[in-house]
Length: 227
Ligand code: SF4
Image: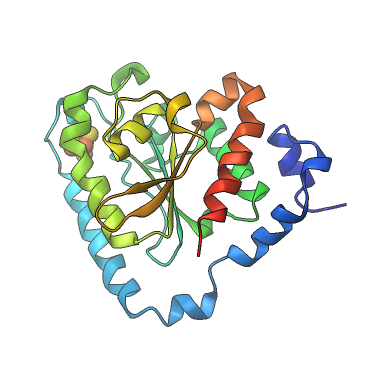
């Protein structure tokens, strides 16, 4: 039995869809020698750690009053994929880590469906602190917190960004278009034009499993943008 099959089932995908394109994903794993030969990775790792400490002390917006832990992000600068969500939830706020709990498990399944694991990606949110009762982020909070995400992108230097959910997509693309308008095509982020693909947030997929197959198509689109 194919080792990806359980994850494809979790993604709501049938085996007939698991064809040659997905087999190709094996080749997109970061090459370990390439990682070791990247002289900038160690320096950027230290800079990310320093940025995380800055976020720990951040009081730029009111969310610092209600947070338990700052959720800065997880991963290393030696990866090619950056996944960006909206904001920490209750479990993330407790643990200080992004995408734990059910949404995190589904994100893991999404990654595995295209031949990746969490060690192959950097994961972050637009907001580093939890909005009370998981309310939508306010525009001012996004504006205050976005410099952290932009610096993370500078330091990770991903080959492709996957924006999960409307808030992440709108924040990264500086757009007010809906998720439906933004997904399904390739965008770019920033002056260095990092390829960016918009997809559904895993928390939405838990509520609307029918969208999982569209998410897989989005991930394949992102994969096709890797050079
Ligand atoms: S959400 Fe961002 S800007 Fe607001 S306090 Fe937390 S780290 Fe600072």
